Length: 336
Image (cartoon, rainbow, N blue to C red; front, side, top):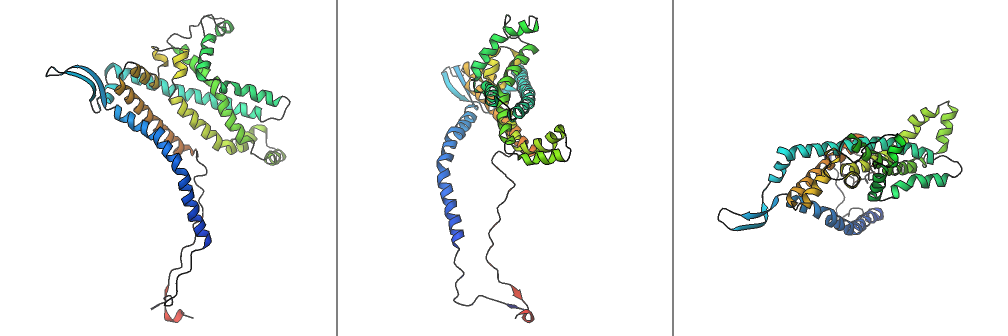
């Protein structure tokens, strides 16, 4: 066996201009992204770390064993988290946790159905299409607090909702009717958001695909299930993911529409707000950290299980450039 070696004194081939351009573009990309990453660390990373740190302390005021006045933050470790899951606080937390999950599941399900229907309507070519699109998107443009006040007047004991139903339902009192008041108001406001994203996905589907399906005899329902839904799936999954994250941190709508002190509509965000209002910052931070972890787990599971691609085609891989040729060991008889 003999080893073919490169001739002595011969330098390796120079790096191609393409490789140099690629490295320069990479350095430029990192340079341009650095300010954005610094801003994200300041506005996202720091509050997360600060909230986690605050959750390990408790605000106390009193007299210690030596008779000295104790005032300010006292390190308590995981006591704030333990207090959340024990006693009356535990029952209240699990009720809020259930309400948060229940509101998210029900509202997102209804919003997907109505949002897809809105997108199909807005995608049709008919007269006054612009007016219809604008009217559908108006609820999404209204601030949530204003929307909550509007629906609070509608669900008043003497409001239009009871007039239309011909009953006297006390929507703002504790109970299932309060939950459905929140669900109706949230679905009315945020269904256009899903409709808008699905509409963007519908408009990139070539019309030739539907023409070919009609030639093959596919019905409208078959076209929806086999063409429309698979092609708008990326946009739909991203919209659903955003709505799930919004639903899990729901606060302003039930707080303004129904009010505080109503266990049927109390969410984890409301618990954190109430603890913060009572100057129990450590307990409030503990609620916030638990909610943050819950949202992270749900988002990760959603992306992994359903394949919601929020940053582009994650599976697409660019071909790697060919490496340098390696010297081969061959038998003498194989040499030319």
